Length: 529
Image: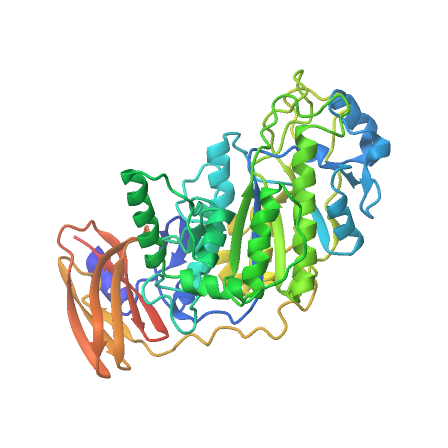
């Protein structure tokens, strides 16, 4: 039998060959693939919020979470920067404590609202700031180039076809908000970024108050003022953000001179103000401490100041969430693109390393410590790294499953196939966090989009059934790029046909994505010679 004839007889309704979209395995058959099923569903009805705190620069985890039980090896490895044993703050975990500047976070541990995950990393770590950050944001391996973010893929699952049709009645608010000059790879979907940026806290309060930063009294300054006004007027979500912010008139006191606190204060205000936004991203930099990490008193210095600001900001944020009555809705996490080496350098600093601890915090967090203190050699060398205990993708997948309440099969589909088999479901969130969450509606069983012939050579006819109203059909390649929009108009209810001419396209699998109201279906189509 000829290959083409075999394919024609073996795949009459939908291609069932395993394929990859942006590095993520799917079966090109709508009823079998969780990733394709994700395109067919509505959103999971949960009001849970995740706040992601990036500690940029590569945080020294060993001076943040100190292995008291192995203190002699810890001290011998970093005599010039080690924290004195009698100054380490206990957190209710035997043999482990945190930096003496982190009294705020210690209080959260005492209140049962914080957990440390020891030695989080990934195999074959990359020590470039830029590449390592991409790996953490995308959820990829060090050998993979993935151009979407782990949170972006989640939001793309929940809100397919964004930004077309958004904002809308069901989701009038930003899907994700990054406080910073640009939206990050973390919220990048398969084709567009699923988040928006608030440039900085000043920009936020200017928006709320209807003001702008002063400009110079020059022709260029007047033009700048006009550009700012136009940008503000054209921002789709400025109205809902302003309304949410104005709904909150009182908050707890946050620490001064603390940019992380300034960002988290905005997040708390928007959550309480009623935004349905699910993911917030904030960042705090300065952790690339190759030299002068500490003062003569090793409990003080650059790193101590950074950790104090992180700790104070998180404590104020958690107190604010409680004051505002929304703390049960919010979980936060910290991460840095890598840790530091076990042995300090001669410049009273630390060099780029591998695994490091993460914190998760919130009233719904299962408090304490996950894992054990890192193994520290008796005679550590400059090449020794903290060995990984937990893959960071397991932290992400656990939050998606146990906080955002996704089915495990869907969670697995959001990560590359060579990773999802290794993902663990970790004890991070208290039992019952997903009780009462409404799951997505069942996947439709009616086939609403087909094509003939399939496979095809130069062209094929797309047949679709619409319930009436606005109907949308896109052709998407295996990289997730929209190749062509075939249909984008209103129809009366019925069955229709539209040709798809594939001249100039390479042979292979493509996807015809159908959307009609809240219904989506995906059809795999194959072009052959």
